[in-house]
Image 1 (tube, rainbow, N blue to C red):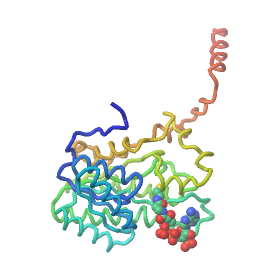
Image 2 (tube, helix red, strand yellow):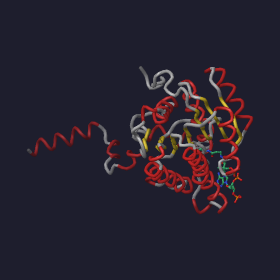
Image 3 (cartoon, helix red, strand yellow):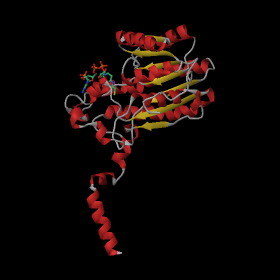
Image 4 (cartoon, protein in one colour):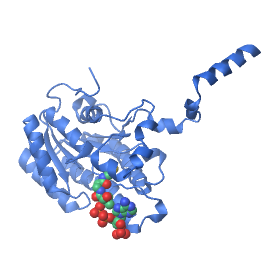
Length: 290
Ligand code: COA
């Protein structure tokens, strides 16, 4: 048994159709692939149709499952409606939505243009709202249950310098997750979130830590368990929260970061830097006094 292995029973998502925004690459692709392996039909969306089609073919070859690739900029409500129309037309209905599409870049906040700030808010907060509203209204009208799973981040509650539009937007997504968990529970719609710590991906890592920054600020060094995350670990959690096994989990945000955000929060955590010999000396002087 290892954390790099799939965790759920075969067929755990059989009969479900799941939309994954930002599903063509990175973590969205890894989570989508696992949903597919567990028997789900998959709809993957992003702005890049060629990337999506390539991913869809690769996923279908690997699993024998069915994947619909639809170009959809989550900022454009008409594209979101059309994406759900296409999903309904092919699969009959959608059962789950993984709001994973995001946009982010590092910058001192005073250097950001208004358009830069707005762009991240438009993708992360308003884009997630667009997809959520379209799916939610359809589920409510059809009296059909549904599951939302939103990818946030640990700085959604702490905030973080240098990614301020993303922090503000993700905090909004977290508030929306918890609000709708209560308001839409009566329609059998659940809403949960995952806050991942560092999980290496080609796209986000090179964008957020360009060039030598990734060596200088090696994210693994900030993680108490001493390593970064494996995609399968995140996929296991996402599949559980998307499946009916988590039917009683609603309004939760699950952190999966090896303890990273708490490492920065605990007042005395930096005592990690004290060598064993110094602890030995402190202990010895304490014993002498007694
Ligand atoms: N630093 C500061 N400002 C930046 C920037 C950066 N690294 N990258 C883009 N911007 C600014 C642009 O200059 C522009 O503002 P301006 O019109 O005042 O010059 C604004 O942001 C919009 O940029 P644009 O490239 O037109 O937006 P887009 O919609 O094509 O792209 C982004 C969206 C900016 C988020 C782009 O980085 C992207 O598509 N990323 C892919 C998804 C992603 O980031 N995922 C992250 C996962 S953590």
